[in-house]
Length: 210
Image (cartoon, rainbow, N blue to C red; front, side, top):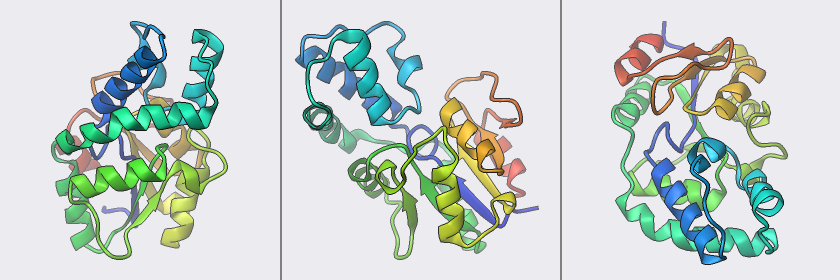
């Protein structure tokens, strides 16, 4: 049965932007004399900008205010957006749900500027589209607030909604919001307890009743 509402993570779920974020982060680190660790990808996947900044400051000795640091990172990221690609199958499913009248929103831990740039690049913009960025909430994922904000904007009970995310923090946020949560990671792995784990767009279609 198709759910009443579907709320999508953006980076890594709708668009294949995680490699761009990692490349920009590594470039920004090197630009200020820091050495990216081998496990950087695993440590920052799905994590909002402020906690990443705190890690850079506390563990790697970053000596810049947050506003200066994030400008440096985005200066590296935005030129890469031209090469952004959708995650195979995801936007097709989004559009099919839209045709069926299912309420949807994009729920991201990225800043508003990045949300708008990414969605515009892959052509996923239309009048009335609902998007929640990290700037729109007090607490980002893994807190429930971003997904609860989406439910509020869509005027649906969280229990009638599905959250889709590729990261543990995102999936934990969906579960905390009381939603059926689909964990669709970049590569096969276990998900948070209570999440439905999938590994393909076909499995996602089945879970959404398409």
